[in-house]
Image (cartoon, rainbow, N blue to C red; front, side, top):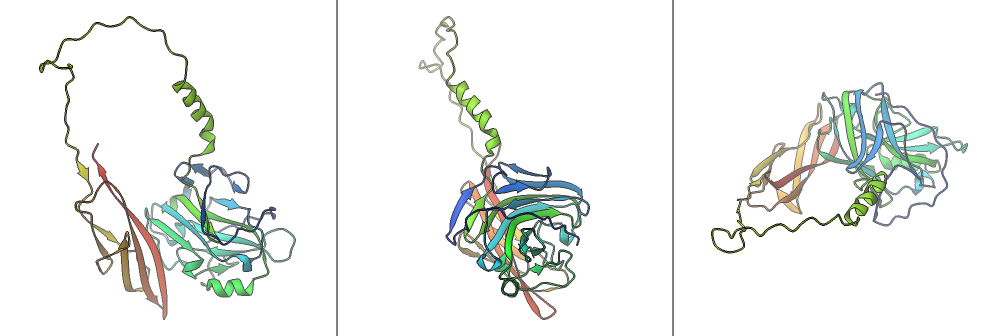
Length: 324
């Protein structure tokens, strides 16, 4: 897996406090930037791709608003969805913390957060996934995955004094075809950056729309003649009652992810705090009679491979809606 390191310089800003908070990001500007034009802020999040050849091209969403050392990073995670034409492990987005070991202001190593765990698992396409320090599986200065996975604790301890240059999420420069992804949020030390905020590039259009609502009144036309009374002799208004059809409020089945060459240990799933029944990798979700809305299923899947236990966290988004 060949993932290119992008060098950068330290950007002066305050260390993010370890306090739970959320901040909408409306554009990739200021502390945020895109490595190239394949990465763009949209109303639904930061979009990557589409990359016809994931081994030849890619892009990154980069944050330079963190000043401190690796020891100062208490937690990091990113939430995303992705798609690819095939089933290759290295097609997912991946997080990185770029480090400056020699104090020259430039990145010379990275801590890699790879949801495929170095090629052991192919994350579920189209699902909302989260990966980060809590998954305790990282690589140090090894984008290709040659040395295997390490724990977050040991990497953090071994390189505690390395200064953080930038933090970000990338897709591409790895493998796969027709890759695309949507970055929904990124959290650093409890501070969540939410990307599903309206882009400020639409500001001018919003102002223009407001002016249209408050524009100059048009010239009055001649008053029309009164219409005839309706059949009921009242206001001449006919009310048509249509039956609203609800879609999706049935028994649904979702499937937990797989891990190549590993034995399934357990599957635990919850929806809105309630445990869901699971048989093997199949999870039953009873949406019978549920009202219109989104229903997110959180899945914790454990595997056993080469004497080690691996945990994969994923989310499936289900919805109940009205038919058009």
